[in-house]
Amino acid sequence: MSFWDVFFEDGNVNTIIAPPKKGKTNIMVDMGDKLIKHGKTVLGNIMFFKEKNIQKAINNGWLNPDIKYRPQPKKFKYLPTASELLLASTTQDDNAVIVDEASISASSYKAMSDPATQFRFLGFTIRKIGSCLNVITQAKSAVVPTLREHLVTYEVHVKRMPNGRRDLDILKANHFFNETKGDYDVQMIPYDYIKNLPQARIAYDTRHPGGFEWDLDLKELYDEIARRRIDSTEIKEELPNLVRDLVADRKIENIMRKKMFMQSGRVAQIFDVTTQTVRDWAESGILKGERNEKGHWFFPIKEVKAKAISDGYL
Image 1: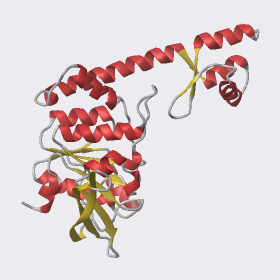
Image 2 (image 1 turned 180 degrees about the horizontal axis):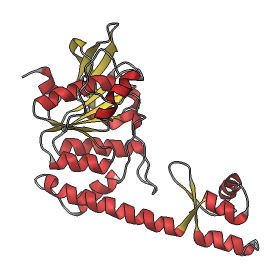
Image 3 (image 1 turned 45 degrees about the horizontal axis):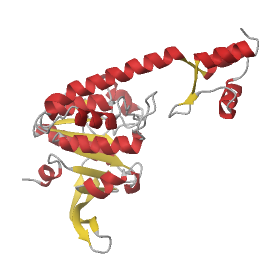
Image 4 (image 1 turned 45 degrees about the vertical axis):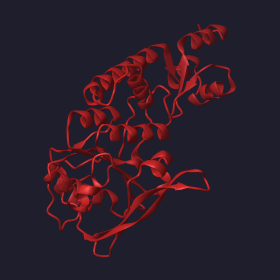
């Protein structure tokens, strides 16, 4: 059994760490390529160039002209939403998940658990359904504390060498009982050092800004699993329907909210003021509204109507 068989073992949570432009994603695309050749399916939010655009990307200087690139394999899937990732993880056996942590953001219209909580539950879920989660990140401190301190199996530091290849400094988690704290602790100890790894041959999009949509609240998912009393033997069978139900519920909620609320621009048109004035009203309490995670204000139609009548606009 090779190191990579151990590294990508089901239930592992691995972090791949390096500053920007050191080749973290490049390494994971190359590792994903190797996993596919060994029969695994790779799931994640890494974007690839379309086959017709590979030469254009080379001409633009975004890919290495000395490498003969291959297009995205069918078993290396781009899944930019939490629901797609979970559905693929539960319906396809023998897979590994690669997530670029830096590009993950909360984008739901409805307020939900904060991104750190979401990411923690994603780690729990991926492990519970028997996949391996690999998190690409620029700094160890950026990893959700629960994952970093309790769930990480291997920690990989990527070093870019002058020849364009990469070395990997690999640490393994050693869990022990800390007498001083009176609790279990973890220490990352040297495990292996792999030299001279080649650049990826699959044409992944080196310029893509990334993205990942939390289209369902994973805490709600866990609460629903508990409410329905789904045990571990049922999780893979029941989770897809549960995920679909929660995503459908959220879409319905968003549609209903859009019908009952107005955005700042529309309110500004009604009162013939700037959107900044509308935001100032909201901040000062003159007009009641709600602000989402992106900082956008939404105002109940009944509140807007009442102010318009009061101010003589209707």
